[in-house]
Length: 195
Length: 257
Image 1 (cartoon, chains in turn yellow, blue):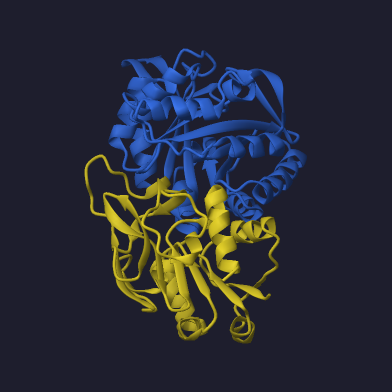
Image 2 (cartoon, one colour):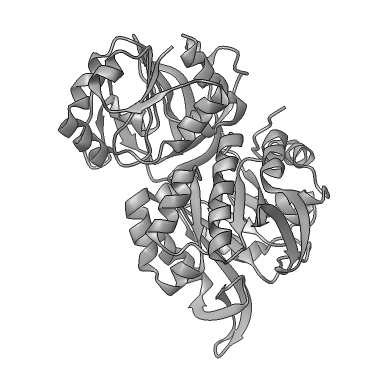
């Protein structure tokens, strides 16, 4: 099986690679369109800021490549947000795979932003959550979130309910960092690779 | 519900963990990677590795250790100790660290916090603040210390904590040198003040001696995370017991078993 991690300017993806190493998966880290199109599975990771990442994707044409992929694609963290329609983070037009807008957590006294740490996800409706215990804890670091919408396949609550995971056709996404989310995160990655 | 985090801290010298009382009298507590993996398995929510070797050779040994830790464990970890440049941070993040902690360098050059958060994102920049209640010309004040807590500065701790947040820190690691090593409990009042003023998470450190101390720092201390070293290394508190203790008292914690 050929797994590709999409290479772009969004932060450090070393921990994603290590997580794949731990589950014994091989992968290619590339921005080459042919390599991406010929992969069986595509991982679109990310740590960073939406507009900078989106500008780069446009510059290299990946903003057109990613939405046109037919194989299972898994976006995580900022990767997930870039797959939405729009992000309030520097008012960024994103790729629009999921027709939902990413919003900043509202300011509420006593609720720190970013939402950082382990929180439980619930109401799974996705194959990626197969064999996961109810209310599994996963690790989040983010200041923006997609509200619960028709594509939500797992939700979480911080200040208000938001989408922890989205799914539409061959596109899967998680707001949290599977790669450092303990055994739960590892299970989700394995489930994606086993689709 | 967002949970309170339990963070074992591993002081590392030559690939092995050490922990002293008040940062002197170091004692060996084992292999750093193995110990980290054990903590992850026991339900630690995050780890902190502090490099206490200051030599060039020690630095490259530490980066190799970071690589091995990142390969082995599946929870987030922060690394710190002697970090003073964008290059240092880049090397550690590329080795697989999730966050870096800066301390003396931020005091020397506060602009470094802005530069690092701009370059790598706030989420991975932790500013460590070592503080001691000190007699100054204004009476007793909480004063920032550097060099492992030995060297006083002229900076007051509470405004400094606000400043590091404004400059882009993603998290504060607050160590009270007054309570560190005492096992008499965290500095609750100071932690509550810093955490209450901050809109970023605050990790409390220094003074944990029993499970009640963690309960206290998460409730009256308003901390987002509690960090300790020797009590974990020497099995005075087992993390699963601590999690259960806090869970039984209705604190949100991540139960792994």
